Image (tube, rainbow, N blue to C red):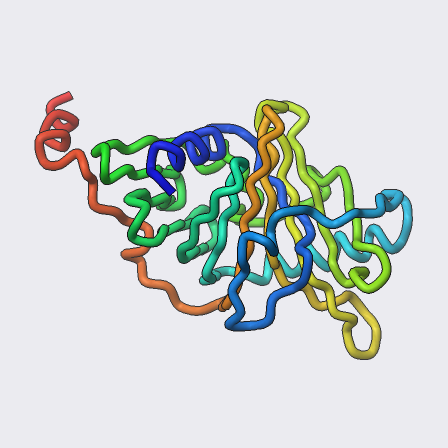
Length: 247
């Protein structure tokens, strides 16, 4: 993918349009990598009444799972609204820290230090910044994830895909952010109780209706991550740093 196209995708995605996660065509086994064909279309879903016990059980299972994941590392495949595909490595550490490192052909790094999300463009020598709490990623990196405040829909795939669960969140105070849907596989727990969850993907639908899908593979959770992951080399150089210090 040429970097000008990539910038058009990332800027609206991070600046305020919505992330949405949607069901995958198939769950991926460990070590297996998604392809563009795998992430092209969301599954059909069935809406469940918020007043059903099943709804509440699934919501509790998702919330418990997300709060149990303090760190995460995975390979990702991103399909952009124009159908182009990019790949890389994703790191997360709650609260507030993420890193999207694209393959070498894309000289862009997205990284948050816990407070500020930076999109670093090494080709243009630019850094664009947003408070992480004002981006859709805030749902994944909060200190305490409370889905009841945000989630408006819980759904599952029909038939053989009934083990796939998606939750869709939208902020009514910021409709320009669109929606974010997280997609999970859910395995029945032994002896009853809440199902065992695994995050598989997300889809972003922005305010203009553009769809971006991110699929995770080779995922590891609750491992020790290097603090250097949340830092980056500033492409603006020492001259910019001296100018900032003089202000």
